[in-house]
Length: 277
Image 1 (spheres, helix red, strand yellow):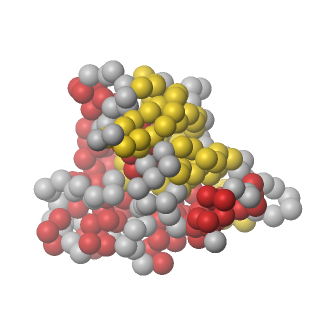
Image 2: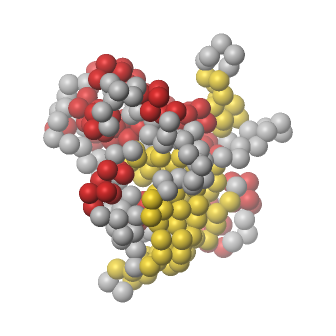
């Protein structure tokens, strides 16, 4: 049986993690997405921002096959999913971590929620136990192991949803406003874990947020392993520039920006200026 470390190491391939090719979607006559194209290479992150109701969550739902586009192609982990049968989509989603806007916890205790995807993949139960306790520690829920969803506060439920998504360091993770409703200390711990997964593990990800402070932090920190095996966050400076993270911005159904954060903050585009000021 494949153990957790082998599973992580064996799930890095050369094809892009996520690709949208000229994707459009309308609903009740309203254009939600208008010929959107982008690629997220393996091991890279895209931070998707934009005004409310600009289509950010729609992009994520399309990327995991919960919605179908009117036109265009969507490739997830090398699979063209726009015409994929539901049973094949379900199997593909088992290798992907997803934090939805709604926590969507299963009617089972916290530990079973967090371990669900790993058990479905047939990983070793003893190692899964260690991983579940690790990610619960990351989100500050060490004592919630046996609690049921109805015993959780809104913030605790959110943290369980995040722990479930990151458990086992899946090769692709979608984060839809993962820090929504969380206190600043927990949010920072979570974001540091997101950075670790990106830089140390090589996870590919789409991170949706409207929080510009989160965006600045993620775009300017690198997680590095020291010679003694410990981890440290390094801030961008004159010696290095982070190259594995880009910002994308949606507005009026169009992708109006896709590039490095330095260009985003300095952009003279009226929609971007209005959003960040």
